[in-house]
Length: 518
Ligand code: AHR
Image 1 (cartoon, helix red, strand yellow):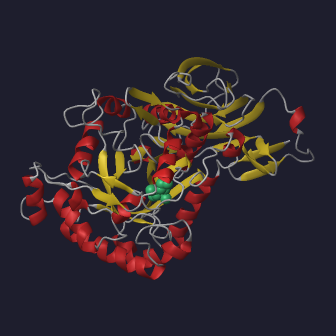
Image 2 (cartoon, rainbow, N blue to C red):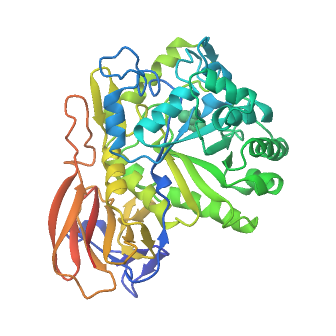
Image 3 (cartoon, rainbow, N blue to C red):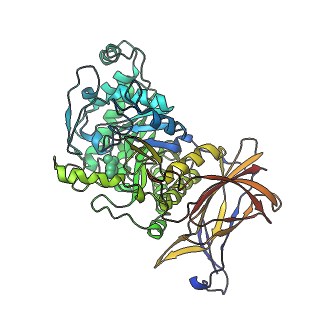
């Protein structure tokens, strides 16, 4: 029978793959790790989020002045309360494609004028700008992370934004901030230069030859204003763009910013089904491995980290955009992003696998931001009368609440889940332990759409019998989702599972986190 390990296939001698129809009533799998072994302490910025001026993420999402559900700042208080449950450490803003033509001065001060959003073809009131974003971040307990305009902007405009946010009174833009009602610096630590400027469709797209020098001069100027900031730059996981970038500007960078969406719904909104999504669930880790290899070959491994600062299984739906002009018919189709039936257990299982991939590479991946945080493809759906926690919300909360801080090396072996010529391991897992090695938390993902997994845990102690506490998210079907009329159809449960010989049975299409004393 074929067994899949993290390293690939290990075909049992002389035994061909068992035909799918004769598979046992469950899939066999093992997870082996030594709880006493040293681990890698992961950065909690892996649980970051992204907020873009797109459709109803800002206006009608986090910011809705006049709503009975909003506070005195116009922030949806129910959204703040829900997002605080996720313990979000960092939020990236204002884009995304929106950032590549955004001029930050339009979004500060008392006399703001609306501006035309060249990326998404709509007018932005600019009522939500730098001050509002920073204040909202503090309200949800997150660090603000600003993505600057390297499309139509300049190094000077970027560094002036740093001055506005981070200097005290000894500078023109700092004094402007104070006059705008913010006497203390905003203390924005994270700054990205550009967004996907490698894409031809991006406003102000750059060539490889242009990009390195622009990033170098922008980073120099931003650091000349505040040398304590962390600087990121738009990058890809392939060498033709990023190797020249690092050659020109690597010495000024703390992270490279990479993005990933795997169900391409930009033009046609036909969400892929559960099994199709599962077949793509190993691709995020391939991206991470490519980026880590690039840092290695360019000599920046260990010096520059990876920020997966836009990720989502589902690409956002915006036919004809960015840059499609003020086409109201096309713009109206963005409402498709709000269809809650899109976000099923496929999204939950895929997202858990992506977080596991980031955790497995915690020494390189030090930030990840789900794209976006509300509405569109985000974990939280916001409507005029309330909110809906989508399946991914529960995964993010489980990971933020229950994992121990150290990721241990683990050998995971399971049957393949197959669809046509494609296959992926049925089981994905990550093992974490406390600093004193007295507690563990194992995240186990069963990707199978209809079969349980009998998973044996070999954690460096004798086979374990007896009860173990489990937080389980499974849903009643691989296509289960939450919606306004049924907000808790998919909800996490706390269970006591009985380990037998160290084995547990994982329900189909499920994410489980087992916790226990060593
Ligand atoms: O589909 C949304 C876009 O995806 C973001 O604005 C951009 O950064 C990415 O290409």
